[in-house]
Every structure is written in C-alpha cells, then in structure tokens.
Length: 74
Image (cartoon, rainbow, N blue to C red; front, side, top):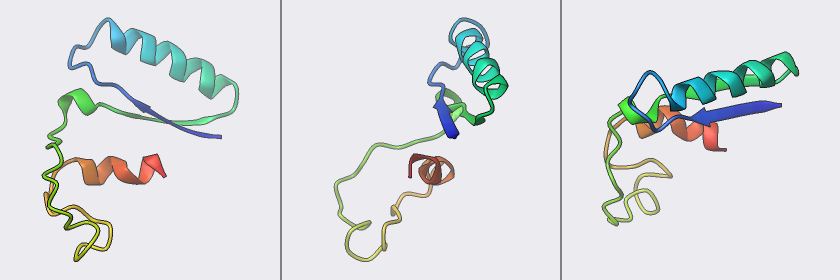
C-alpha cells in the first residue's frame, strides 16, 4: 500500500518523532511511505476563482507547493 503522510508541524521534534515512528512501522510492514513536510511549504488558500474548474483543467492558478503534494492525494 502507498501511504502519504502530511506533517504540518514546522518543528523537528514532537510531531516529527510521531511521524518517524509511524513511517518506520509502516515501512516494516511492507508499505511504501512518503512524508510531506507541509509545515515548511508555501501553500496558499483557495481564492475561489474557479480557474481549476474552468480554464485550468484541474490545476490551480496559484503556483505554490500544493502542486507537489496533489498527486499524493489521489
């Protein structure tokens, strides 16, 4: 199974320790795990412009780090 982990904490400790433990267990169980450090990414909120549904063919008018993680959500 392919698993995407989204870590929203910008700190190296605390949440990251939990993420690391989860990843280790999931990897040992044979899963393919990819971690995204979203707390350190530039991700803008939705503008509600509908570009993605009209002209963008599913892509956002804002060019930010969300483009890197969108494939993981599908």
